[in-house]
Amino acid sequence: MTADTSLSFAYEPNSAPVPASERSERLVNPGFGRVFTDHMVTIRYAERKGWHDARVHARTPLQVDPACAVLHYAQEIFEGLKAYRLDDGTTALFRPEANARRFQDSARRMAMPELPEELFLESLRQIVTIDRDWIPTSEGGSLYLRPFMIASEDFLGVKPSAEYLYMVIASSVGAYFKGGAPAVKLWLSQSFTRAAPGGTGAAKCGGNYAASLAAQAEAIRRGYDQVVFLDAAERRWVEELGGMNIFFVMDDGSLITPPLGGTILPGITRDSLITLARDQGMTVREEPYAIEQWQADAESGRLREAFACGTAAVVTPIASVTGENLSFTIGTGGPGQLTEKLRQSLVDIQRARAPGPHGWLQRLD
Ligand SMILES: Cc1ncc(COP(=O)(O)O)c(C=O)c1O
Image 1: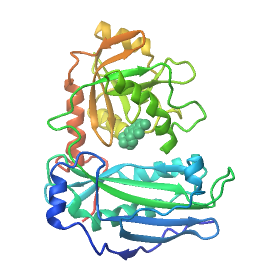
Image 2: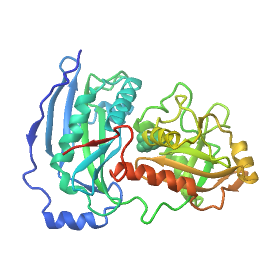
Image 3: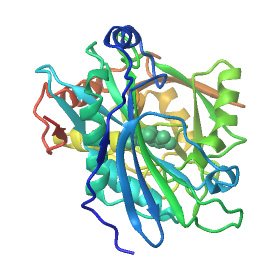
Image 4: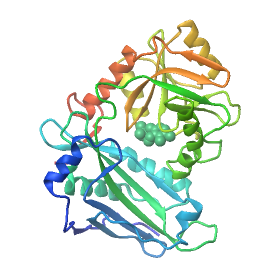
């Protein structure tokens, strides 16, 4: 079925939005993922009808039948990106068409229908426009957008669902780290892996995150901040963290990051940093990096810095790595200079404080 890319959105504003004074209170210290806006977007899909029934309406609980397919077989995908309030009061999104394309890639892998890029982008414009007062004005604040799609057919057979529900919700978020990101301590998971060749590692599907939680919980239990995964085949090659990609900064000023081989998420922050670093004349190699090499390079000083990156925290320095039988510190164990320089370059573009070289910033008004 060819999808309709020109749906118009029915507009049903919330008749009882959160009063402005209460909204201001909630925006003082919103944290991450706890404060939600007044509205949501929904678009339905059915095999025989294609995409239909696009609506912007009050945020409301879903009513699902206990046989709803997503509850049983986890046919679900999502995205995450931020809307920013710029210094001049206007709003903007950072590379939303990259999220649209990744959402389509995830859909194909999960045997779900692809939402046309224009519908995806329009759904974001709709929610940001109606809920723009929920974007915090505080430094580092933003509106985190969560587009997602679930299999919504009520049927217990194991097969791709015949019906889907696409939704966008929005959450006001504060600066992930106030006053610059502190360096994090990583736990190296040697018993759990995140994704296998031929699996779903490159898709942004809920199942990947469910599978990573035991390892993340183990990291926290042992006193570390985040978990870092090795590849599933050889248990040797560094892949990524539970929710962030990883970069290594070498003593000659070059960068190394693991290649996209189907088992790691093709992060948009990762891609942006590769481009920015190359624009600034740096060498970036997308090549496999082994855990024993990581340790040797950290100990010899060949590795100067390492950092993780993703939409939520942007760039997070890595202080140290500990596993069952290894433990090493990276550089001084604190935030490194090049890491901070790259973080600042990216944040400046996202906030329109520096010219975005590649049309990355999509202004909404
Ligand atoms: C597993 C994983 N890797 C990497 C990333 C970073 O991706 P992005 O930079 O597009 O946010 C994320 C976050 O979305 C993630 O969940």
